[in-house]
Image (cartoon, rainbow, N blue to C red; front, side, top):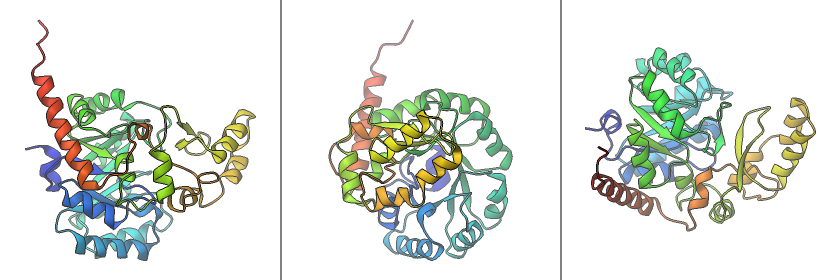
Length: 316
């Protein structure tokens, strides 16, 4: 049995990223019903909104699902308590020290996976006793590691120093890339961008439509002084680019960023002043699909790619 499938009780080792403003109960339940593991993204939800989404997800699927919790969330204690009270059995943590909450979550029978962008933090995950690790390369959308290590380099490096089940993330959106990640040592994958651009995603249609028309090079990692973030190039991005070029201070960068930029861009569909977070792989997709369609395509393409690889002549 695949280690990720065995751990989470799912059919396919495909996890849907818990993305802010995209990952509500509709998306999470659809992915779980299709054989993957859906995650509700707590990072953009008030505590009671999260509780509502968990309850609706439980009503929409009898399959396993989880919650992604950024550990720097301002109301983290409340969020953790809600997850426990609602009987969620899988939590993916990110943006913080995995040691802080892993033992507490384990005490309540909750499996814990943590997202990292370097081998240094992967080693800390193992020390913290997490059940699985997500190693995310800098191709990914949204907030990224400062090391800017690509998925191709990160996965084998993390695999070499850890023993727990490993999921690859960043730039993965096809069956072929799932197979490639597994060839590098991953037990499964976490996919964000491809699921963010499905019908069930809670992102605004205008945001999805813009991302489905992106060309190669239309996203770039920026905001490096504050928190490296991959964004679509738009008017807001140009403001950041100009400020970085003239050496603006961190305080000025925070002032330009302001509050609610991601909500404005992803959830409200402001293509000019919003923060449009999406991964590099978005330029590979050009049509809006349902989660079912995406999952079937991923599985079929994985199997087809595996057959091609098996037919290749061996090196002698």
